[in-house]
Amino acid sequence: MLKPKFIRWNVDPKDKPPVDDDDIVFDSTDAQLKLMARILSDFKNGEEPKSWEDVFKYYTTELKWAKTAFDKQEKIEDPDELWQSIKDDIGEKEAAVIIPLCKGSMDDAKKAASK
Image 1 (cartoon, rainbow, N blue to C red):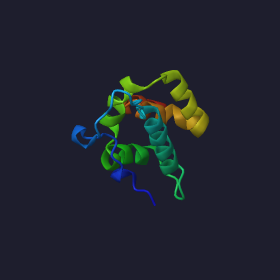
Image 2 (cartoon, one colour; image 1 turned 180 degrees about the horizontal axis):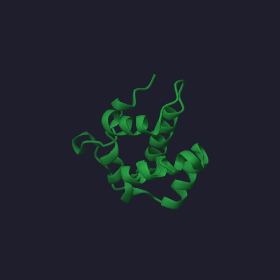
Image 3 (cartoon, helix red, strand yellow; image 1 turned 45 degrees about the horizontal axis):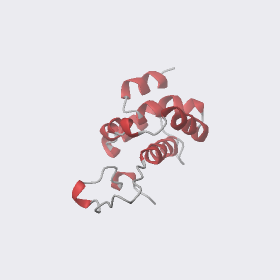
Image 4 (cartoon, rainbow, N blue to C red; image 1 turned 90 degrees about the vertical axis):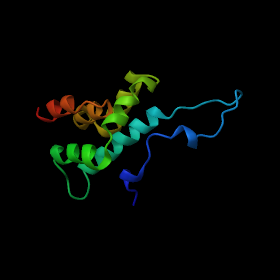
């Protein structure tokens, strides 16, 4: 089973291979945020369904994704398309809480969860 806490979301510059000017550089920010959303959704709805508070705790203490999610915002190719894709994938109700987490906003996520 994949342990999300072992996924490295940021690469140390010294670990990056040299880039040739002719190479196409692909930033996978959109795919990473979609994966984050799917992992959080699966955690919430797993074999033993969790509360939103459990999801928030998992996000901040075990996964430590808040800074990573916030830092990736400027690299999103098309935010409207990305957020709609996440809504289509995990559903409107969960997306209302998880998308703010993917944006790095715990306050907005907690507001959405309390509705």
